[in-house]
Length: 161
Image 1 (cartoon, rainbow, N blue to C red):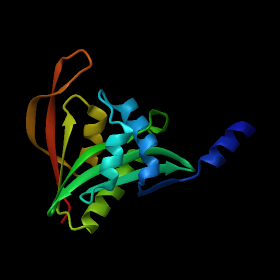
Image 2: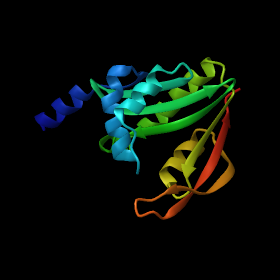
Image 3: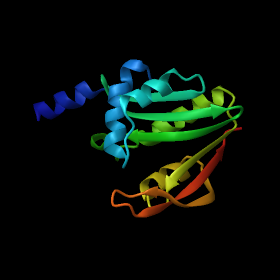
Image 4: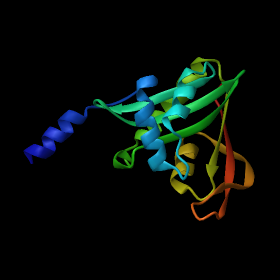
């Protein structure tokens, strides 16, 4: 029991904060473990230095366990990716991460946010619907499974104003 308490104590509380270049390796690792085609460190390095890209990390204690990435243009943004490490899923952390990220987008003048989500990804769809996103379109054969089978994507939108 003491080991469990020590682990709980060392984890700390969840913090959503701007990501920096030193976070690229952790973000790439989480992305690679979460998606069919993971982004590498160099892709995160590029996004972290772009002025029109907003990247947040989700930290538990000293460990980065998630991230959200959006690209902004005028008063719109597109969420490019959001992920939480498998070991930290099911705790509501993705909801906290998403809402905080949306708040920062609104603070930068973004009024409308879009994203694509795999049609069969029920947990992601629930997350986005719970955060106020609605389906506004469908993209046939947008994604590919590991075996090459095409999957449809739903285009979702949320107004922040």
